[in-house]
Image (cartoon, rainbow, N blue to C red; front, side, top):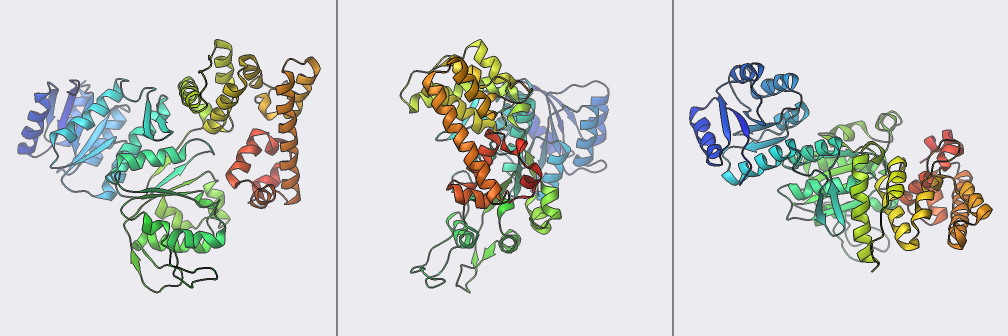
Amino acid sequence: MTQPANILLVDDEPGMLRYIRTLLEVDEHKVQTATCGEEALEQVQKGLQPDLVLLDLLMPGIDGLQTLEQLRQMRPGLRVVMLSCVSDTRKVVQAMRLGAIDYLTKPFQKAELDSVIGQCVGAAKGESYAGEVEELCDDVFFIAASPAMKKIRSQAALVANVDIPVLLLGESGTGKEVLARLIHKLSPRAHRTFLKVNCAAVPADLLESELFGYEAGAFTGANHAKPGKFELCNKGTILLDEIGEMPPLLQAKLLHVLQDQTFSRLGSRNVIKVDVRILAATNIDIPEALATKRLREDLYYRLNAFTLSLPPLRDRKEEIPILLKHFMSRMSESYARSPLPLGPALMEACMRHPWPGNLRELSNFVKRYLVLGDENLATSELQPRPDGGGGSQNDVDGKAAAASADGAGGLKSLARTAKDGAEAEAIARALEETNWNRKQAAVILKISYKALLYKIRQYGIAQTRSTHRLSAGA
């Protein structure tokens, strides 16, 4: 049963007000009612402090959206769930932007109401998702221990039920794909297919056929017809990762799919209609990409029905201890090793480290610690540089010099730092040779574009060499 809470119920229909109140009082919730927005505002202004407000969207006088806006101004932390007998996407999105944390379409079942109240009231009292690991699928999990991530979790739950495109922003490694999977899991499409397409990893001339498929004879080597990701994902959710790397001509075709949900395979005149939820993710500078025509403005506004911006790990350090323990538990099982201790010195070093590679860097750090088994070495790896910069992982030459000077790291440390130094030099050389065109450099180095971006951050190359070129590169 849902934990009893103080709830303010606002609805102008007497019958609906009695029905919902009865459902709430069965579970011993303390219910105050209001028949219009003005009455609800007056009650809160006079000192009423509900744990949750259930607010009807369509009311005479001050409507639900106006009431929501004024309630949030009076009590910024107040949790409000919108109720409506119509599913108006535009109004739902507007309610989300005004701070609503969920949305219920009338008539609803008691189980639906209980689920929403349980999540909302539990989160308000610090009981839901407070540092707990939320498993999504194999080796994919979502953690919301910081205020910023708790807010994103609530927004994801709300937007999941509204069939609109969502743009996911954030630095590389912050968990945009995980957030996309969370939205899919919480949506009515959860039992359908979820597919991810990395627009940066697929060559431009192949990306169109990857997304939309082709007919036999469409091009040399096309011996048989092949469906694209959009067909395979019909009724499901597709994540277009690194959307900023999609060629402009293909962006125009994607815009058509967003507008009409129709497309044609390569080499075909037949129109295929699909029902696909599109999520898009990127770490590019949006204003710069729009100004340089790298991202079509009309496509951006289509994708930007709602935006979720993931903060970097350095801005949600409350989650570092939880992530460390979870990664250690998972990886120790994978490598058939006993979990290693996370001592005070190591934990303190992890909390101080800026983690430029975000969750991906943290995961790799735990992996190295588990393989090497040396807590002192792992701690020293995260120590700040003498110049006040980030951890020594971004200063390969200094780490190698320190290891060779006193031998404290041993042969393993020397081998690893020598390898890192050679790798950093090879990456820097490839970037210089391509005039900091990161796509071309990735091809030369025979690694993925995302792997190259991570290694640039890992070794601090962008901060020490021709940063103006890097920002202008691919």
